[in-house]
Length: 298
Image (cartoon, rainbow, N blue to C red; front, side, top):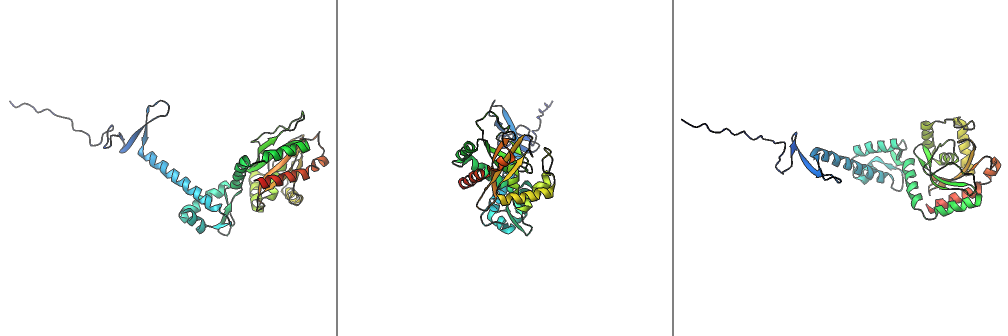
């Protein structure tokens, strides 16, 4: 009688737990084991995920090269020039520029040319103000001269943001802090930035923010604000008296770059029971001088 031959199970063509390189396979994709930084337990990462991450890094690199091309001297630049400098196709460059414009990092002049947007300039101002030598000394000297709270603010998306503050020595203090957001249409720093922005950029910002009333003295009429901004450009400073916050007043002068673009604003703030409107405006020469000194140091 013939013995039955043992039957062996046929090995699957693709195993879940093995692959040619020794790594597991799942759904046809090799899976690599990595140890977590904390516990050392294996973490499985699909090769497809790594490919997607590589695409994301590549996209970021392209966007950064386009941004560098936009920020080159002798602005503005045409699409072809930006694409060639960045080493990115014209189609991809056009898509990246559309996103940069939407986020405020680039602007288009309507004639096929592109330049740096207010958000990129504001970012540069924030970085420079952190590293610039002597800015704190300039602000402290202004505070000692006027005896009031002194700030440095920069444009940040739809508002101004304090990056520096020097408190006064008296018992009354303004409730402000570094990182605090200021309304562009109601604060002295915001209005002086608006006044010195290119007209199209200022209009775009105001379209987005509107003119909400913060106090009964806030300017909520667009033509009236436009007239005030024209006066600010002529005077070289902006002032507000209880327009942003009740009981608070401020005066600001612009920090301009070599092209006259507002990189920030130096402002002095006080309480209305300490300073009259006339006294507030008497601070203007000192604030303008400090702003010009900060401009030189940036």
